[in-house]
Image (cartoon, rainbow, N blue to C red; front, top):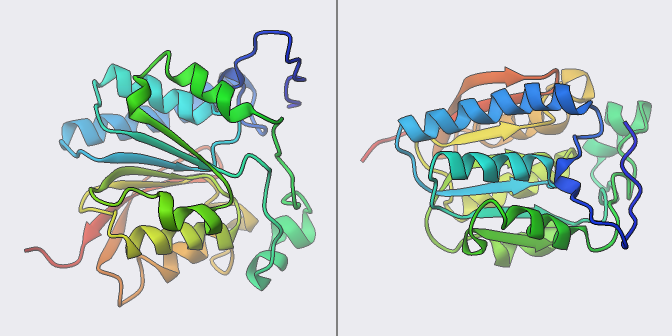
Length: 242
């Protein structure tokens, strides 16, 4: 579905546009149910912490998240991370040889690049839903920003990974583990889990195996649910309890 052309002289809210692979009614059905289920869980389980989104694009899921934060009276912060420059150049052989790059040729350098200044429009839309103090938008490629922009203390309750590439997802997961931001019972949503023909050798499936399935990792996971044709939500578990 083509995105709306940007006219700086016309009021425009990019967060109302669906992800590229969906019509708005179908996006609302798929993502609306998925995010609502996660919020019902973290509310019912009384899990507090940051909500971290990696890959915001035009802000559709960020708006959905902010709306649910208001509905559930969720007081913690929402962090949005995106280059707002489209996809980075693939450098890892796992990405270069993946189906989405080598065969389908859809994950190209710079693809899904929104117009200049879109992060300001996303902020404008979201602070009409949640308080400005609850929102932080970090612009830049993950390998350049995460080291110094992730929360320095506290934990995450929900992590939403919509960053396509293996290298991007691995960078994020490594940083989350290094900075001890995960907690027992939190949820990770892998938006691109079934991309690359669902191959365990590629993409987010491989990252999950290399991180939460690793013997050295202090955490493991169990399945929560799948959403759409592409997404998977998992529960994070501590391997040992205090």
